[in-house]
Length: 475
Image 1 (cartoon, rainbow, N blue to C red):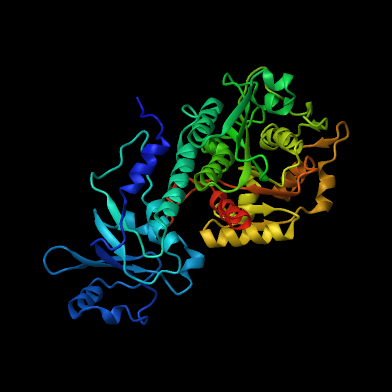
Image 2: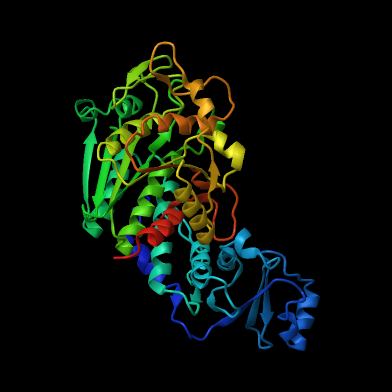
């Protein structure tokens, strides 16, 4: 039997064990940008001889252990590949847990961002161990760098682990009901509330497109509505796509495209990761997280290409392809959010393969018409190593969603501008929100990178948190 999912308490306790207090005795790790930055010149003659014998150079992410002359480790060198490594690989210290033997280490160089350096180490220490125990009984521990807040580093790492665990859990153990459980865990921990509309209740409560997408599965679809914070604070609503598995429906995906579809709830994971950060920090906002959760399955009652669905706001939608189900469930959730005209409305979704073609797996497109909102989100992404890239709501493409029998078709013919067109479809449902942004994330790291092990990644959550921490301050 697989282990149960990690709780917030056990995750935080495990992370606390990896951080040592500032000033603790530990092996020094020195960051080297080039052969001429003064660090190599500070080494002893024996250490320089060792570096030359290993033919080591300070390439980005390269690690070299220095012997102490007594059979132990006297120090560690970490190559940064140049002076601008913070913009290219902000979580560079994440290479250390995989390269070092068990022991205690400290970063002995001047750090441009001590908190991000500490987070990189903890992020690189992550392993998904629900089904397979982590190797090695002894941990690699880091002394908290001077200038870093332990509480903030732990909060960021805890949220990152929480989101990664959700995405990495396969669909047999994480469906719509388990997404609800995760939302309830957060609400119970921080004094929030959760309302859930489930199964046939989606029809009676007017969420017809969420119901249509999920009705072919034996796992009931639902709309999860988490609320936290003062009703008098700024209203921030995040809608996260919660498709726990996507077969493509009757427009079935090929096996190669279906293999990673457990991550199709990555938007929900990012939304809940953001919620955890906000609630842990007690940011002064009225937070609302809406998760339309469903499994896009195949059965006799599955929705079909060519069907016309009536959405929550009354707009009729012709179904062009059942594999474009995410925008349908998001549309009903957006319409619910719109009914209270929030100050900020943000959608996060693993929505289109076209976004990956345009920008790859690491750089989610950001869509918004608000210049200040866009600038703030982009700056927050750069500052936190959680990057975004702005894309346009290109209005001339909106006509490509025209339907001859309904108000709108939810896809366009052809393969051009798929991410833009999906964003334009969602924008049609936004009328009264003061600021709107859509994030088309991948939610996955296909190849291991510093601080980013292969697997689930709740993209955009830390960028959003940083933005609102600066925008709204702390309570």
